[in-house]
Image (cartoon, rainbow, N blue to C red; front, top):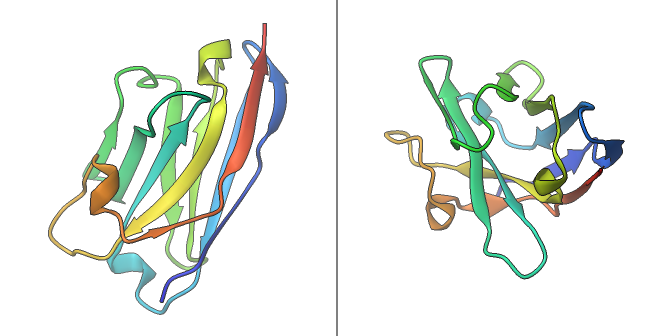
Length: 124
């Protein structure tokens, strides 16, 4: 069983920054792929970023160059640094863990465990 707890969401003006954190339980955190997804009202959950290692890190085109995903395996934590935020980034952001050791997926149903979500609201 893996538990994920997100933090760091909030209200920010367009152009501002936020850093989301996701603390994970489990003794083999370093072997998980970790992803960030988001869901806006009335829309499907969409991929934001995922990482297994520095060499295996992926971003949605909509956030590339503005968001950075990173992980600290010693702290069992994954981060999402969000810069140059836009109103269209407003959503509930979820972190997720994929226990399969051979992939870094952008597909939500590949992820086994999910956090409760944290709200990010960007005002114009």
